[in-house]
Image 1: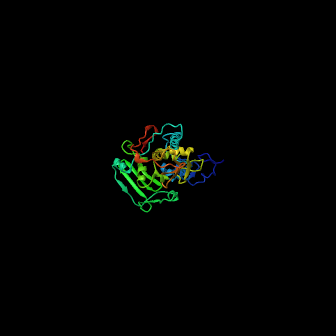
Image 2: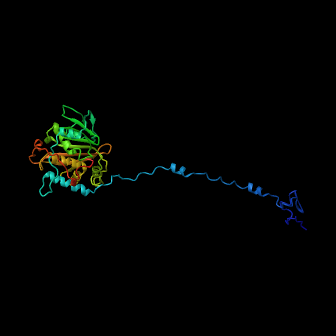
Image 3: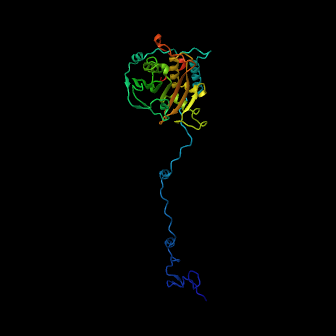
Length: 336
């Protein structure tokens, strides 16, 4: 008869062969298995370590910065629509050409002399030496002028700076050219118009009939720069974007020409032509625009005689100082 242990197994099992195990069962009857729970757990593979504590900024810092959107040009918000510029410029062009069936031109011949301008401004006149102009496309040299603006008796050039506090006229003249580098005229009823002052400064040294070009540098006037930088001039149609040193030239009578003439700066030059010569004897033949190396605007106005080109007004017989009606956005609006 086979003998069984107290665990009910047949003799010959591995437990029954143990010296600590008899026919009645193991010596440790209270723990029939003889194996503690921790012995089993210890034999198990260790649990994986907890994941590292990664904060959000650790991931963000390691990411490369997002690239900017392609072909995005920031342009100033239009204060008035393109059609408004065109309408103002077209009317000025028609007055300069003395076209028939036009409303009366409010711009009278200018009788302002340099001496009278100095008296009205009550501002010191400064002379400067060796001022360089940011002219990336070489326009000054192209027309025979120096791009280093100095007071030179040999070249008959003058660098003049009026500083009356809020009123500023800073520019350079040489025979054939006026260059404006800074102009500000907040008080239109106190200070003379910029167009008249420019004419008076030029006429002090040269005959106004010799004037061929008006340059305006470092333009930041919002009304003007928003038109120059618009997509109608620098856009996908010509593969350009503002600011660009690429010169664009527009001929008399084109839509772009009229719009540029209708800007705040364009009106100053149009008033100069209307105040200096009889209607229909001079015109602004072309307007050229580009940017300088820091992104500010540059405008060049080319003036030419029409037909026989009658001489300028005889200001010796005039006494009236030109006034401008508010209906045409006169000098003084937008700071001029």
